Length: 118
Length: 107
Image (cartoon, rainbow over all chains, first blue to last red; front, side):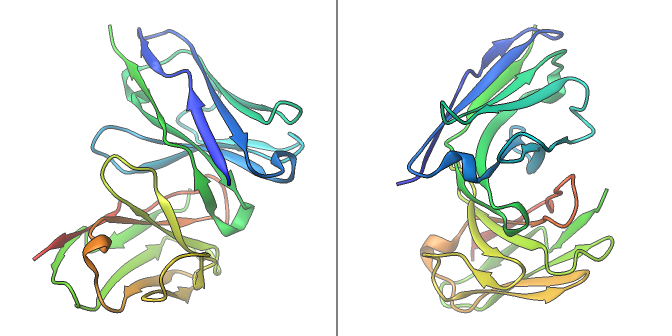
């Protein structure tokens, strides 16, 4: 069965960095786009970034552009999000999701909490 | 960016009620519109993709309609497990914006 397991969240000071990982299993990882979506405490969903199956196409929300970098390792079935220059506004649960491009994100991980606070 | 606006923001309904949630896009997204259900503390779950296609395993009481800028999600007969927050999302263009959510509560 499809499984997505995020890790790497935690408490970080403003201006700090964090790298999130998402381990995928149960499907041919290299066939799919993958996305990161976040949800601030008590708030709605915010799309953060996506990456195409062969890493040829990436895109970001304006709120993270220039600070976050998405990447993947198809040999290791892993997705990553490098987050730099973090601010309190980046505090959220971060979900990785299998992306069927225009047909929505059909599988999601359980999420990992990132807290940016001094 | 394409803005997605859902209405209402919340609603109270009883088991067995027919419930309709609306989602409006600030510009045409053709039929690149998805609906998700989220329960507290859980990841979202895809219900409907491409405006009207039912995701595998989702009960048939859920249906989606619409195109261009106006979309609806309908639950034909609300069940206890349907009390949750529902989000629309456009996948026509990045950033793939979400609506603000509609919370369906028990009356």
